[in-house]
Length: 413
Image (tube, rainbow, N blue to C red):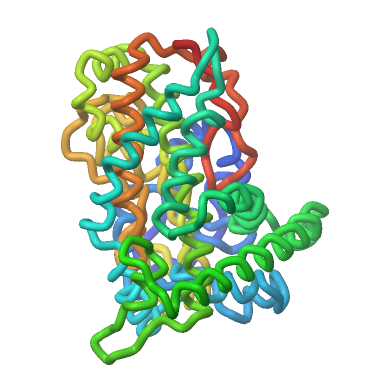
């Protein structure tokens, strides 16, 4: 179909469903979509962006805002604990409310606070790796999952005895972020029920913890820092905003890092020479983690909603329509990166879009980078002969269009 700037959409040029992201290798399908119809309208009326330049501009655009409204959240999950959580997540605010909330949250995410955790994270990584015994072991359950989970607990200030509770709560809530659930799905009711129960328990726990911290704040935990945060107008976070975004932080802050390191390792095992380069020079771990973010991000997409009529690459997008920025496609755009399907451990000039961009750039990105680089360095130092027990193409991946990662990563060292 020949397009001219300003033309209205008249029909799909290629069949593509977001469900195609829920597989071990969505990249061939994404490459075809990007080549033939890079601003693609789905049958449901959402617009999919796949090229780096389009995605980068969309993420930074003030004309594209939070993906959902309070009314749409209420319609999806009702009025219970899930609504209280989802409607107050930082990602679901637009300016000026987003500006106020982000500024207050930012007081707690200062680089000094993240860097102060580095020695403890290094020690934790060594302790977890010490527990890896036998000829083979599941790296996901022994190291990649517990480390970021325990780091978030430490950052928030959750007592050690309570930390086991958060795994199930987080899993039940995370399922509902995925756009793979649609009204009428038989699985939706089941997941909504589990998510509602998890959100209610999570909320009650953190509300009690906030109540404990308010009269007796600590110097070294995030909740105390957020309670003390004040914006330029003297305003503080409301209790509900604080609790909701602690849930958001925990839910988003550990499984994505777990999967990102796993995805990077799989990438280096596919390109074995790159793992051997890292093993020979573990100092490349920071660059290797950046390349893992580009090569196979653990967060596939970010969604925006048009706040006004906009035009992207000649396509007219009406106010209210959804714009889905497919991050993993943009990160492999051959117009931005040479040999985009190769993992190159010291690739120069990486500016991946895996943490989003613009107003909604991930607050936890500095911490994820610290954790990821430490894990890759320690693995390269201690297990230079690391190999997958299962071939990369046979690894079982999570059936999710938003979160990308292997269910298990069994290795031999």
